[in-house]
Length: 297
Image (tube, rainbow, N blue to C red; front, side):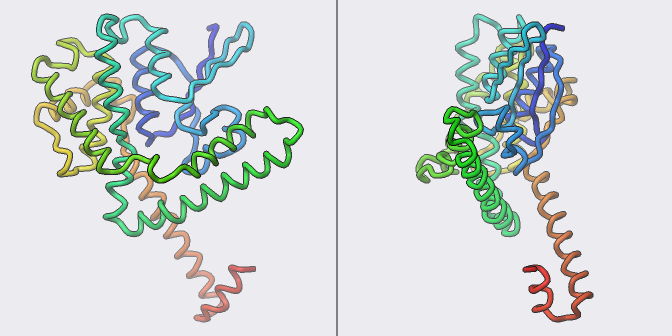
């Protein structure tokens, strides 16, 4: 083996799922390295790997000269797999495939999930969009400040640039962030294109399954998970999803929706907090002041 491939991954990331399923279809062996979210991707060790701090990232290491190339976008990972493996996508349909990918990425399944679910679950909304968002921002700004102070004599330090760019993204105007209405409009457009193509053949490009079918099926699965009346899923697209779920690459990729994963983490954290408060209450009696003093110390 002249190349070592490492995928920095999280099981509940839709973009990591795109990467995993295409790597599997391409027959590319890789080492999977789990990055815990929502804070693990901010760690300085990961900042050395990913210039965007995003999940997934694919590190390609040549064993001949130890050269490293890192891809920090799932679409770039898909393109890499296409170059490595003949037949992954029909070469004469690349324009059509890119159009479908453009639609899928514009109708971001992850953003639709968060933005549509949060208003319906107050605990989830407060925990994710207030508490965890604040913790992420605080940690990111702290790391950026630390790197800036420690590396003043190394202005081109990769970590310094990574954190500076991440903070700049945090400070973007609200208008730069896709709205739920815009995302749902894009999702309906994507669903219409998929349905139209499936009206002509079993799979999106014809009677033979290709990697674009697997990617599209993951996106459809996330839309189905959301169960939004404003994004109807046609029977034809549902049948396409059911057929995709029977394939071996689907089972090995382990498609998982992010919302239940986060809810498990949130409610586990709440249970831990309640348990700690119970122990503290036993220690200090019913005096809330005693508990607060203990925590502040």
